[in-house]
Image (tube, rainbow, N blue to C red; front, side, top):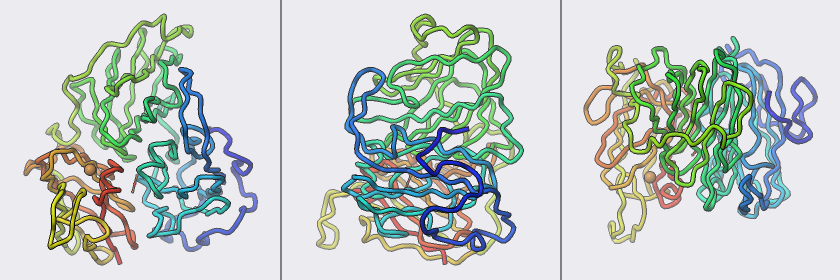
Length: 438
Ligand code: C2O
Ligand code: CU
């Protein structure tokens, strides 16, 4: 179970603190039988944090760096009371990858106002989708997330987790430091040989990061929260995760050590030791795997090509670029979608039940990790090559320079949803648009 979170962290059916935004009767679909209420309080504030290395960073966070791990069971009614102590820029909580009702999405200026110092806001949703997610501020996000306004959200499946050990590993850069979990130093974790392990790799950075797992064969079991029905054969030790993305891997602890490393510069790493707890120094340095081939979830060729879901088809297009020039007399110096910067980008309106066939083309020279709110996308093809692995439903996908992705979105969650680049500096400079599902 996760750590205690402030005064109201107890699970159970106690009285809610503060106003709620929606009654249980109004939650999602009628099939959802609300489970027990799980209440958390997150207090956002500014803090000078001393890291394991002794380095100090000026952080904004939800009470700790990273924020507390919120761990709930599938079916729970999650109630989170957010208070802003002293973050002058304001805060919200966006549930990254979680397809919550629109009013709970935490987008300042769209689904709610920013929560200013002394104010509070209550979020409530049914945790109906198991998997690995994270949360972060969506007010002044490029600064706020980088400084530490993030944490992880783990929804355990109603049938329980298959593995004996469940290790959550967010990777984050803050200032000149890199955190793997909560530490900026190499750490060791003891796991008896023969026991099963799930690693939830979560990239909370603004750039893609590559993780390497060494010392054991492993399986890729979930992407962006969704269990893969047919895990791809693993032919590489390296897994690249887009900014905002999550990959879960599973392995059985061998007789020797297992190393989790990343390509992030100055990075810490984690050694899993089968025997008596050895220090990271005793286990020795993890092998350097930088630059090795990466696993490709889309192109492994197992199984039939992805099929477009049924429903009235609507075509939409996002052309991503960077345009330091004049457009129709208006100076545009930013990251553009269809030639314009947010909020000048016309939104796309579709009806509930429509299937949006979205083509995303990158005409620029930087990678854009595109993130969709409130929905997952089914990847159909990349550069004209059909996705042929397991059905891959993602909420964040790296569109590299020159690439064209075709994805499908089933409009089943009404509201105004933001789609944007999760390099949050790019989003702040315009690469963000609204989708209106009515
Ligand atoms: Cu994780 Cu709109 O963001
Ligand atoms: Cu971008």
